Length: 134
Length: 101
Image (tube, rainbow over all chains, first blue to last red; front, side):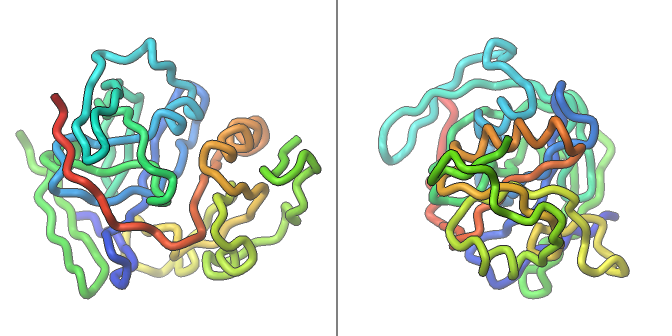
């Protein structure tokens, strides 16, 4: 069981994450939002660019429907992704831009979360996460 | 050389000054800060992972926009093993529901 601490007074659950790319040995720290309503885990394209990834390495083009229309992105596998005390290698993320005003670089969706059982203690500001075997 | 968005002048931060997250937010309000040497405030905390709010770090650049900070992150990786980029202002909540088509 791993424990992640977050600030319980915020509007959303902001947690730290870490992504590895071709250019980095220790990974790049990220601020992410835990979003159990999102199917995919999203990282902004510029963050992936900073990590040394290229859109040409993407596996497929995506289109997301939002309140303002349709936005293009792509799916890409990253070398390693750590969050909530656990790591995933060769992890598939959705490269999708997010509004600058949100102050985040990505969302943790069910593509990452479904590997685990987890308990969010909102008042306490802690998330307990246990990997489950498939 | 790193620079902020408002000018092409060199970074004005003291690259050796370690600050808490609250101190960073007061000193660089509503900016994207590029930080290195991130360490937990409370090493005895049982948590395996903590958000940036519970860490100290060293600010090496600060920018008005997220995209503007990107070159500083890339440049910082030439010198530091661990580099992060964080917004010091209010974090917004209006997350829309998306569907991948």
